[in-house]
Amino acid sequence: MKLKIIVLAKQVPDTRNVGKDAMTAEGTVNRSALPAIFNPEDLNALEQALRLKEQNPGSTVGLLTMGPPRAAEIIRQGLYRGADTGWLLTDRLFAGADTLATSYALATAIKKIGGADVIIGGRQAIDGDTAQVGPQVAQKLGLSQVTYAEEIEKCEDGKLTIRRHIDGGVEMVEAPMPIVITVNGSAAPCRPCNAKLVMKYKRATVPMERTEGMEYAGLYDERPYLTLNEWSVADIDGDPQQCGLSGSPTKVKAVKNIVFQAKECKRISGCDCDIECMMKELLDEKIIG
Amino acid sequence: MNNVFVYCEIEGTKVQEVSQELLTKGRKLANELGVELHAIVAGTGIKGAVEDQILPYGVDKLFVFDGEALFPYTSAPHTEILVNLFKEEKPQICLMGATVIGRDLGPRVSSSLTSGLTADCTQLEIGSYDDKKSGNHYDNLLYQIRPAFGGNIVATIVNPDHRPQMATVRSGVMQKAVYEGESRKEVVYPEVGKYVSDAAYVVKVLSRQVEEAKHNLKGAPIVVAGGYGVGSKEGFDLLFKLAKELHGEVGGSRAAVDAGWLDHDRQIGQTGVTVHPKVYIACGISGQIQHIAGMQDSGIIISVNSDPDAPINKIADYVIVGTVEDVVPKMIKYYKQNSK
Image (cartoon, rainbow over all chains, first blue to last red; front, side, top):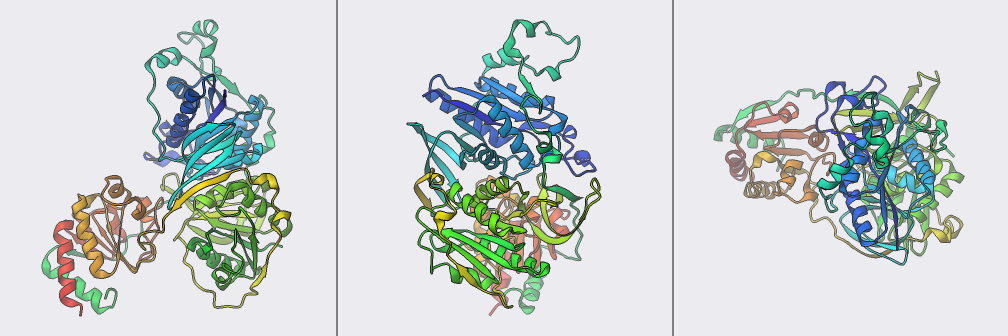
């Protein structure tokens, strides 16, 4: 069976390297101040998608992402690993979205694409850790969902058998397609980029990334596959009221940086007498016993 | 109308501790708002088996949905129960555990009702909010407070206009306590078929293997925790020895777990277990914010670290400057000598 697979992927700030200017005054993330990476669990999802494609000849994998023009890098990274196509949702109207407004945009784009048999993404993104977008997309499309997936073990008769990583164990479930799947970080890691595909797609861009007089501009007429899909709210027939900040029920009231208050503490050396004193003190005060 | 709801999670007929923790928190919020605390539980063969595990936590009304194929949990039937019940009951707040189930169910319900949901809250409070853009003032909103951005900031989230205000909370973050005040303790058993369509049962659970936790790290009064500074798996043997003497449990930082010295289910921190022991002994732990988030409410904090300026020392009550292999055996020795 030929499958149409859409991978939901996000470019995220590398939260391991967060500086002072990382937050705006409104309490949303200032993405331009941070190094951007492919969200790790979305790579696990891409791997599951590519395996499904290989096991079902004739299948296609497309990456759907939302972000500023530079997030087209996510689509390129997917193409380098064997995906067939991609769509970047980029528009100022999408900005400041919480999970609900994000899932509205993604679900609307998926309808515009014409749906899919399998919609698969990472369990959560490292900049928010919410794990909400996958299930919310599923709900908006009226599809069933399997979250915390570790491996798609079987694809037969329009049904998938999926192993999930649940609290304290594992679970095998069977679910009919079309379906939304979110993949856990404990799943197989993603394959590396393929050198030939990197050569083929390294100049692939969305129109907004291009500048006047840029090198290789002539290539884009010759090789249409180097032009990636770039969609605005209007392109997906979206309702601007349900996108971005205006479509977000949650608001950030306050944000504070973390500062530890130094406590009064007893500093002691590692010598025998000091430690004996401390243990006696703890015993006398019945703190331990 | 306008009550506080808690979704109770079960394994078989056992109500999960995280749900009882949320009932205790939900009771406090309901008291502050002057409304009732309602609870929902859904499963198979649970009638008569779960009520006593839920009602003592201050519940005014419990909805028990007992039907075929409601256990093991799958997304759609439980979503339909909550969505359809909420359309009737119109709660103002809904809490659930930030577990695999809660994080599967919460977003689906919030998307159906177009209400806001905040994941992994570490504090919940009631307060007011002024929306600068619209100029509207709101009283009695739920402040959903959580670390964000890899633990570098703490954000307070509100849902001014949409109901219910939904939040998930990880296990161990709140503390459960049987309610000493009066509550109505009404129990109802709605007919499942009125809430769940036949089409909802599309995902089938073929098999599952779930093990009970092998230890009681979360509830231990004394925790001995190790970080990268412990240096080896053998180093952790010393910590287990100390924990055994003190009748405590062993935990560790993410660095120690990633190094393979400790099982994953013993990780303490924002992405692991949150602990509130009487005594927390941090051995060779530098004190990353994500780790601190999981232990900062401990009673007495003792830090054993060769670095006198380790960040964790700022929140410690005792700082012992020395290596783990030197200090920990001495602690064992002098504990044995001085305890009767």
